[in-house]
Image 1 (cartoon, rainbow, N blue to C red):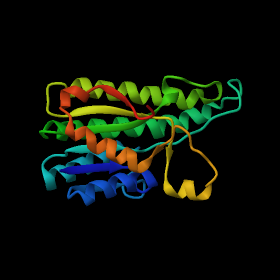
Image 2 (cartoon, rainbow, N blue to C red; image 1 turned 60 degrees about the vertical axis):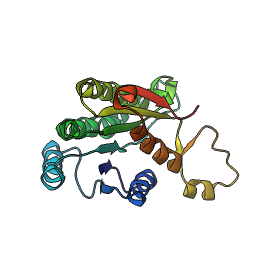
Image 3 (cartoon, rainbow, N blue to C red; image 1 turned 90 degrees about the horizontal axis):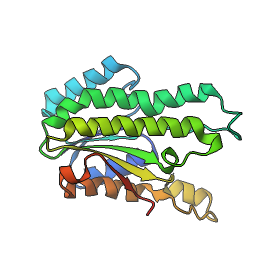
Length: 209
């Protein structure tokens, strides 16, 4: 399979990239140093290059993220919204618009975003983050509707937060209750290929349960 991972340089991207590479798949990992995902033309060029080389894409795992919050609702800084909109929404828009045609060419394609419980259960100080996550979910569900008559699917994986080995080593006393390990996330992404597209298209799969 041909898998694109955006936000590939971080621990989560490395876990997912490594998982698919170990299982014999071709992984194209990009980060901000490779492609500016806020530049729609640059993202379209990336899609064109992948199409020219491979003819299709079988997976897009969109991992670009970020978090900003405040102590209270009244303290919310709308500059945080601007930052989070770009990171969580605008990059998603550019990537999904560019790669939807390539996913249509796959017999078993998957488009995946990682969302958070906060999208459905916002806190007073997390208004900007929760709103951006909710917007990204809605956008992904629209993509799912576009893919409903194809062999591909768009799916939302929901976590409380992610944890990796370096975080655990830095805080060995921390329980990280309810957190999803990045390796478990990679396995969850891979597991989407074991289920029919129509069964998972447009669904929110809660990994905290």
